[in-house]
Length: 138
Figure: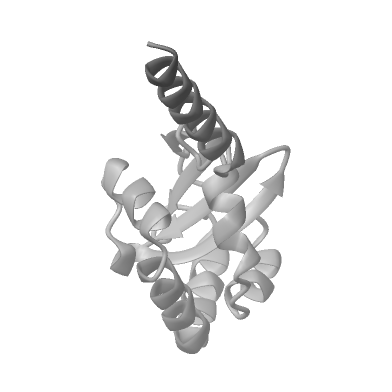
């Protein structure tokens, strides 16, 4: 009987160690479709979308709040929208690297799938602080 308790105890301790050492991947993240016109400043977006930053994926996985913005509605001003589209067109390499990194990360793929976002829709992931992230999709 003691041997059974030892095995059970060892199994419980092993499970507890595994669970406490696993990163807390966005299982509690709240995804919300952002209101039209609520994108970051178009100048900031222009700089953000041009550069692939692997840390943005970690921020997405650890976020508590994710605002989803569609590129075609994130900016109300016609000039800003045009500038944003041009920034996207000029950033195809960074967008490709972002999508490939997302595809290579099973946790990121599960998170996107749970929230009905196809990886090929993702244009940019932009941390905004306080465990919040904006994700721009096409």
